[in-house]
Length: 277
Image (cartoon, rainbow, N blue to C red; front, side, top):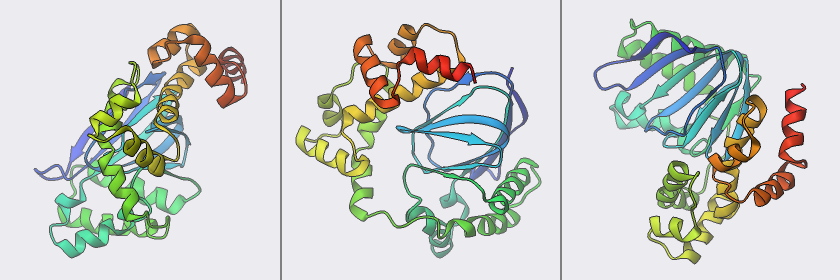
């Protein structure tokens, strides 16, 4: 059974930053969700998987995962795992425009959009853990927390190159399609549905989607669905046909073909190889 050591703590009445430490003792498979702030996960013990949009990340003890604002993400924990979560709303912390700009600079550059796994950075991991503990304690005031946040954001500054302005603009325009995918990935979704959600022609939608995600909408949707399949194949004994259907693959022969092309083996062979490790 999942155990929460402390409830999420919010600093101030505006809920500008919260922290949570969770221990999970069994397999859990969470649905996609999104939030307005930036999220950082710190893995204290064990391992887990996090799917952010169409990408899947394996996280182990000492790893951090940065999830950008507004991204769709879902977690799967195959076994015992202890995780610290930090959710930040910097626009509610830094009321002065110059301080806010200073804090957001690394995130608005290369760290904007998607997720970033950070391994082998013990100093940054320690800072993150201390910040989570500070907020969790319920004793932090806005001044101590602001100072801790400024120390914490320093190591992020040179971690990624700037994203182009056009790419970021296209990401914003494509958000309705992403919302539809992550809310309804288990249902039949067509390119026409996605382009209509964004109020674009099919050709314009396809071109912009390809420019941002470097794959077409169908490939992206299959990646999302396949990420939901992998966790259950590895940990549960559910029938493969049921797992595929629940993820949105209604044609089982097509599912097997896509799976083999992507992973080099059948779903059955994949399950067998993972469960014997």
